[in-house]
Image (cartoon, rainbow, N blue to C red; front, side, top):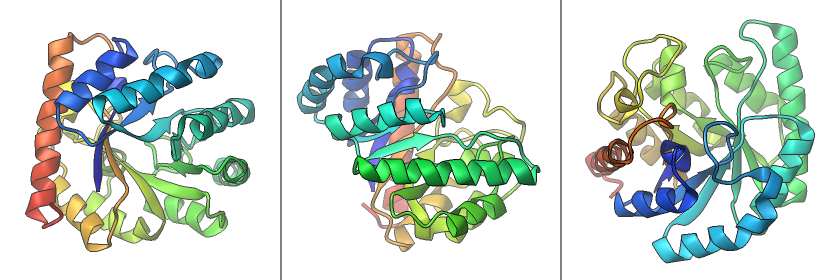
Length: 265
C-alpha cells in the first residue's frame, strides 16, 4: 500500500506547503485537492498553468501523485478533472456520490451518472472512484454494492472511507471486506461517535477515534490491496500550520503501525 495524504489538510496554505510537509511527515505520495472552497491547490479553472509546478513539486519532494479529489459530478467539471489528471499523470479522480439517502430514484440517478462519468474517465485513461458518504444516495454497504453491480466499467472503482461507514452505523472492517473486489482507492481517517460530522480535525487524526483502523488495514492487506491509502482531514483550513503538521505526522505514524501490525511492512 502507498501511504498518502490529501492536500486539503493544508487547505489554508499554498500547494508547495502541502507538498513540503506531507513529504516531511514521511508519506509516499499525495492526493491533490481540487475541492473548491477548501483549498487553492489544483484549481481546475487554471489547471494548465499548474501542470509544470505540480510535476516539479512531485519530483522535488519525492511524492507520487496518487489521486485527485473533486466532489462534483457535473459532466463539464468532471471532464476538466479527467483532462487535468491525464496531463499531470494522476491515475485516480475521486468524487462524491451526491443525492439523498433512502431515496430509490436518487440512488438510480446517482448510479446512472457515475456510469456515464466512468465511461468518460476511460477516454482519458484514468479511473473514477466514489465513496459512500453520510446523507448521500450511496451511504452504506448495500448502496455501494448496488453501484458495483450496475456499473461494469473497468474505469470505475470504489473509494472506501471508514469514517463515513462508521457514521452510517456499520462496522468498517466488515464493510471493507464486502466491497474489496472493486476498491481502487482508500480514504482513511478516524472518528469519535456516529454523528453526521467527522468532528474536529484533530479528532480525525488516525488513532484518536473509535474506528478499528488496524483491522481495516488488515483486511486490505489480506486481500492484496496495493493502491493508495490517503489520509483525508477536512475542516482544517483555519488551523495554524503547526497543527496541520502534527495531524499529518501523527496519522502517518499510526498508518505505518497498522501496516506493521498486519505484516504489510
